[in-house]
Amino acid sequence: MNHLRIGIACYPTYGGSGVVATDLGIALANQGHEVHFLSYENPIRLTGYHGNVYYHQVGVMEYPLFKYPPYALALATQLVEVAEQHDLDLVHVHYAIPHSVSAALARDMMGEAAPRTVLTLHGTDITIVGNDPAYRRVTCYGIDHADGVTAVSTYLKDATTQTFGTTRSIEVIPNFIDLERFQVTPCPEAQSLRHGEERILMHVSNFRPVKRVPVLVEAFAQVAAELPSRLVLVGDGPDRPAAQALAAERGVADRVHFLGSQDAVEKILPCADLFVLPSEYESFGLAALEAMACGVPVVATRAGGLPEVVADGETGELCDIHEADCLVKVILRLLESPDQLAKMGREARRRVEREFSLDSILPRYEAFYRRVLESDSG
Ligand code: GMT
Image (cartoon, rainbow, N blue to C red; front, side, top):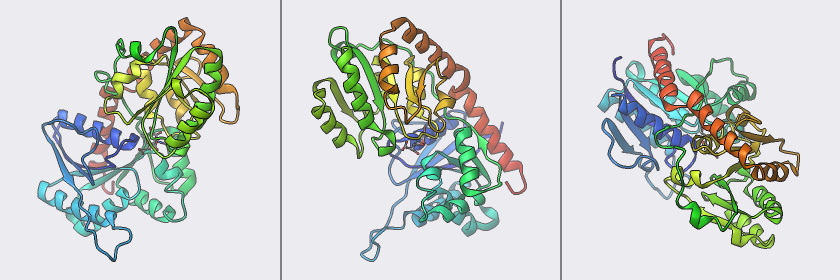
């Protein structure tokens, strides 16, 4: 297979789309492709040296006239320059806003010489940001002007079609796990986290309202009243202060640990007995998949694409979002059944190996790139 020169534009911060973009780029580079990341900061998972990987910082000029510096324009300019200097075959942008629009603009600027563009939709770019009146039309434009579009779940593909009434074909390529990185391993740190017979519940997110972290803290307070347990929260974001205040109010602050943002979640996840993701909505739920890869069962909401990740009753359990006491009941039942937890944990790892391994998903992206490059209009 010929090696490609690929530009990848993504958000660099903690959050699913940037993680997926970075892991995909590194994996493509390991296959011999030349990968150029473009972002306003070094992507958080792009650490250490990787052969075939380059990083181009998108600088935004500050000027008193600009209340909102036009990042989308700076990215379009940088895309043109990187595409010309490195003779890119393809630009793959993650998250529609603003990356797909910058890519469309770059393509117009370059004309015939422009590389093909692939857009991967991740979720909130469609459901929250893209659906906002301020961005709706331009999101639709970005989707329609990409040469190929992928979505991380069937749910998201259908939501995109419905939300924008677009007829364009969208390929579902689910998110993936590097099985070497996320393993079922003993967790020495669990000894210091856990006191006595306590069970450990864990949650990883960016603490945005959509993740419903306060709902989790409330559920934990009720669980902890029945069963010795501890809640470990990894990540940071707008709802952290509210979650901390609630833990204090409910008298469980000594059993709720806020670990902040962590680079190596794969070292922390194996310490959990159960992972909880009570989101109002998830297009996919990469954090749940990472927990499953570490052999940790997941309790989540039956929302968005989560049922495509968590096999209800096999690798964890799902609760309807409006069923108020479901989380507490399910968490208690599972924590009180160590055999069932262990069985679900084994099945969780097996499911990830079967359906979501990097080795099986990477060729699907490569095949999609080929199709986009070979098609007349993309
Ligand atoms: O969850 C977030 O708010 C971050 C967001 C992102 O784009 O970084 O995550 C979305 O993309 C992830 C990777 O594809 C998915 O696993 C998440 O489910 C999705 N988040 C939501 O849909 C809320």
